[in-house]
Length: 408
Image (tube, rainbow, N blue to C red; front, side, top):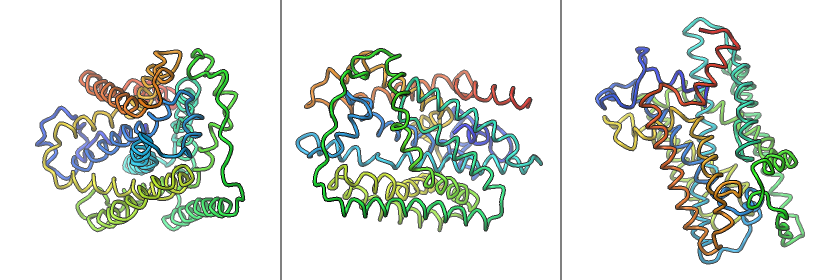
């Protein structure tokens, strides 16, 4: 996210574009593309909250959330399955794709400025890794920034190779990911066990009864289990980064990219989206791996194409577009803030609401919590950008980067 923020706020004339400017500024082709980039980041941030909020409102956190995925659907559970499936993996995939686009923007900026690529990018990756580590330890065990830092570092060097080599790396990474999913499917098909034993309840439960520091220690003690997804999705992340960069260079945000957008919308929204929803809802937790890491990324590409098409054809940004743009411009700050606010509301070291809500009320409670947190981060982004050019975390990140690299 940090890689793309600085460059994405410049139009082709080199002028900063601010959401508070009159909407007539969006009538030219270049700003429309940039508006779509920031809107997509905003959608991705609010969308990942749509998945993470179910983890935050579970009395046993991520472990309890995973354990309940295979539960029988009754009553509110059907509504929960549908709402979870709508968000599951799509916006994480979109965020990953946008990160790849951010790398392509950075590379293009370096080329225009006559700078070597990847140049100082390893410092960027190192700072993002530090951000992710702090976020993992102190806020959310489901952090994605550490994985993005490692993936971005590798992809940055891949982007310095030829188009042919990049295509080869993309195919290899995607093939490894598909192979892993296939092997898991085969293993599940030949598994003689009908039902796995439910996970024992946490005792003591650091999410409901522990202090802030208890949760930090719990994350450290279970770091291997909490970080396994980052390792598993590494090939997929490389493929999505590279695909995002290729789509950006191919003109997916330009008028001449209409055919690309049409194909992405057909594959992602007309084919993958209904398949993902049906399989995910009816298959329950057993199909999570195949929807979250199989069909969901295709839906993410469809969302990207739809938003790009919308803002290429729409002459005005509108109220909701401006709010999403503001979240997109402060993406890193909002990502961390939404998990922090959710933790304060739900965990025992804060208000402890998750453990106090009855199972019958959990779905409406989760929906209400999502709306509250979303309103807080949208309001924060709007008010902050009225006075500052960057979000607080973005500012700190940028200042640290310039200090380390001695850039002015």
